Amino acid sequence: MFESEFMRLAFAVGAVIGVLAPAVGFFLVQRRLSLIGDGIGHVAFAGVALGILLDVSPILTALVAAVAGGVAIEWLRSRRLAAGDQALALVFYTGIAAGVVLVSLAGSLDVNLFQYLFGSILTVTRQDVVVVALLGLAGLLCIAVLYRAFSAVVIDEEGARVSGVPVGFLNVVLAVLAALTVALSLQIVGVLLIAALMVLPVTAATRIGWSLASTMLLSIGLGLGSVFLGLTISYYADLPPGGTIVLVAAGGVAVAAVGGALQSSTR
Amino acid sequence: MQVAPAVELESVSFAYGGGETVLREVDLRIGTGEFVALAGPNGGGKTTLLRLVLGLERPAAGAVRLYGEPAERFSARDTLGYLPQRASLALDAPVTVREIVAAGTLPARGVFGPLRRADRARVDEAIALVGLAERTDDQLRLLSGGQQQRAMIAKALAGRPRLLALDEPTTGVDAESQEALGELLARLHDDLGVTILYVSHEFGAVEHHVERLVLVRGAIVFDGPPSELPGLWHDPSHVHV
Ligand SMILES: Nc1ncnc2c1ncn2[C@@H]1O[C@H](COP(=O)(O)OP(=O)(O)OP(=O)(O)O)[C@@H](O)[C@H]1O
Ligand SMILES: [Mg+2]
Image (cartoon, rainbow over all chains, first blue to last red):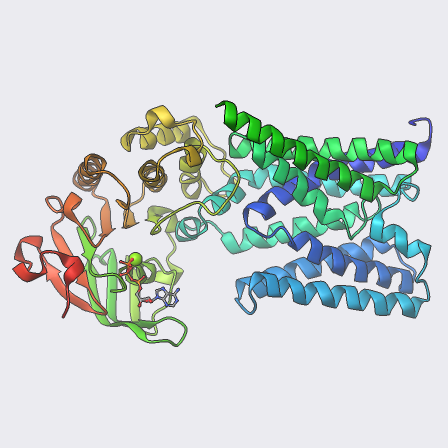
């Protein structure tokens, strides 16, 4: 399958998001914000629609919308203007509603849109790969540098706050990283399924990890594995990549749950 | 020039979100290097008082100062150590004792600071101090409740705080370990001059070590050496004023 250029490009983008999505999702899940990726995804959809309407790169507008949505959710949450799930719901529905309205204004409620909702491997260009690689590496670098700080916050937020760890700043950084991940995954996985790639590998890894660090690395391994396996299956079986990748990741959760149960019964 | 006390509350009153007044007109000065036990009945306001001191809550009236600075804008936060009440972990992922205690060294290192050899030594030392050396690389969830509590105490110690605030640190901790914790805190206090605020409604473990007992029940109802505590209050969880 690597003789076709579009598959090479899809794998290149897949490699980046396969690592980035679970790495970011890891901390979201620990902070019980698993659904934030979904909320941001829906705002990103509005961004895509705006891009189509204005005839500029939908990825770019999605990135801007996603960052705005992510920061808005975090702001509502931290100001206690709304409980976490209500802040999410507000942003979530506003995003999808704005998206639908903008798309129909642009007169493109068609297949073109479908690919952003569920992902497509045929649309990745060389230029996209460069953008995804650069932004993705920046995101990964950020997580690598802040891994211990993020860990300290998930382990004991109040204790960290008292001792002067900039918890609010770290939360905003995490929201921006989540937004970045959503925007970069748009093409391959699609806005409706990207959150799954941030959450499912972490869920699976939690069952088999033996420390925070090992769970993080297992999450990344499982995320990458799901993307590669999902893309391969989608190529040969002619299936939409987003759905296939997520089904593989969900299968990973099932296998890990059984594995984890066996592990603890033999201990 | 007079040295500012470690903790200073001036006619502080507080209520949660416009509800009933939880603390009324509290005046409290705690000097650097004091070892103070805060006791009182459930709902008396001990945790609230601690949160005010640490700048986690703002007083409705009055002023709270840490080393002379307003508590919520205190600048040298890495010198503060806090063990929240029932500090159970909120996360589902497996975490080892070492990882938890290492998180306690982050404030001193800074957000971008690497974990150096000296920090690792400090982590091992804190774990040994609470008697968990053999469980260092075990997952927290495989430890007993009391052992988990001791791991959280080690985390608070690993940051080498100048002011240590412990909220019910001995919940679920057996008598022997309580005794050991009392000894440990006394050593930190005597040798390193650490200021210690020890909240508990039973302060048996530190009774011989503290020099000052503050009873909190909506206000401060007693403040003095434990020996001067009126007999009828000797079980502070039964203080009814
Ligand atoms: N987050 C909160 N929101 C509203 N009211 C609160 C909150 N936390 C505590 N309270 C109220 O404040 C009062 C004091 O509570 P606090 O937790 O300070 O008591 P405490 O002395 O620490 O009790 P305990 O021994 O049970 O730990 C109680 O009446 C409680 O109902
Ligand atoms: Mg309390």
